[in-house]
Length: 579
Image (tube, rainbow, N blue to C red):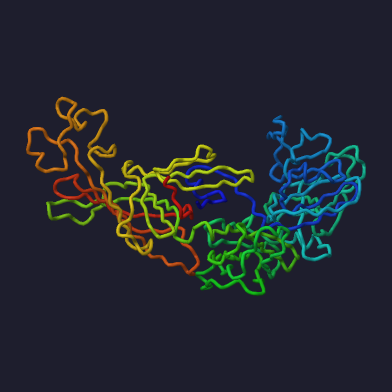
């Protein structure tokens, strides 16, 4: 049985659920921290797996504080310790080996500054997932609350005047921390001296005063913070790079395979493509990532480079389930480094070749055909309003398309935090130990005909799709059935004997008339053939027209309602469990 070893975030989001994604080790890299004796501040560029207790356990320190950028101007909020006790919100998360129960620094995060009192000089090398920097500047003078840390590709310190040249923070003063008194480990007490320092070294941190509130995050503003996560189904993502410096700079993007973890695989060279996102003005087309692994572009101050990264999932033919690299982005003016990961899940042995999987459709009916007589039906005319309906389509590995009245997404959470999710057909039994269970359904389809196959079978999803079904006289979905209305119980006057079969015309001649009869339904979907701009780029959203037809409702002829449909692929799983 095929299962999915990563959370189906799109499926569960559509169903109103939230799960945390599992970190993929394929993009883990190293950073070495050089920490002097006494008070100092260092820049944590990576998010490690370990908790604070594990991360700091061998450090010769008596105090570690992490500056909380979002709390710098807010001391009225509440924070909770690991014991559940409320603690006044402050600008620092703290960890102290002597007061573990009251620590608020529970898990170190990338893109943060650590304030440390160390009993000795030491260095520490750790692994983690990189994050793009984000800053929030608070106006300050005597006690600066703005901590700046950065990575450089140059071994030489970079002048702060160069680094801050594009900042809109107003007049600034730059300090570093010093002091050797271990008895007062609280930041900004009398044991700490702030000394002026006009340069910044890679991995170090500085305290900077500011005149203005600002969200300037450095000479390079890179988004998204956590890079591109292709997951199990995506085939394209966007990295946005903006020059927020004061001068023109050449930005270099290098796809790097240098990482610590060797248990997971690299994204193959031939699987990656790129193009400039400004397609309308540059006529950019997808091109293989260069063999040199390097891309570059010169950006004027304020100019943005939208770099689209494409993934040919057909090339993910490795034994590893999680694949990854990372992009190292360097600003030539200041030598700043920003790293963003690329991760993907290999689905070679799990199904998922486009367009297989579960598709969620939204149908909007806004026109209705008028039945004139037995042989004539008018063209669809605008209705007085719109009728919105949900549909669910599943396409298996053989191309069979099914219209589902309902489907259940269920799975168990495993020890490593992943969730093995499967798609269950209406007739299937859901595992009793499932920790996640969510059902999607379509109210417009009969519950006793929950799986309707497309006939004839289409050669592709963009060919006309037709789903025909019958709503029987005894179906709870029959519109002439009402469990609390005695005139529609399909029984004779004694309320015991069944009424005549309503599907036999001769039965309407007798004194006892049939009360219910079979109604035939049919859904026709015709999707636009929107070919990808590259053969590997899977289309996740398709649109087209829909026609819903009911026969036998009126003697004169069928009722047709026409409108539009939009289908979104919410799961690539090509297996539907039936038992």
